[in-house]
View: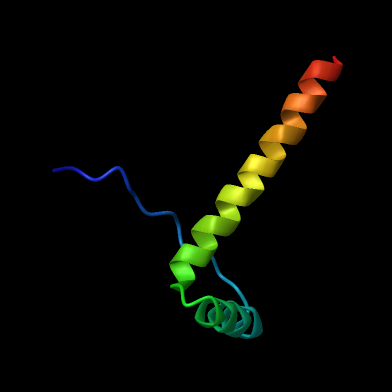
Length: 58
């Protein structure tokens, strides 16, 4: 069985940001990787909607 998942390049962040991210993930009872994936997914969805609106305006 093959997986449809892959890894992304590492992202460097400051120690305060990393700690903040870890605290948030713990408060949601999720792994940090889940929080990052969810944030990226929401960002891409939101920006796709903006791009779709801009394309319709042309």
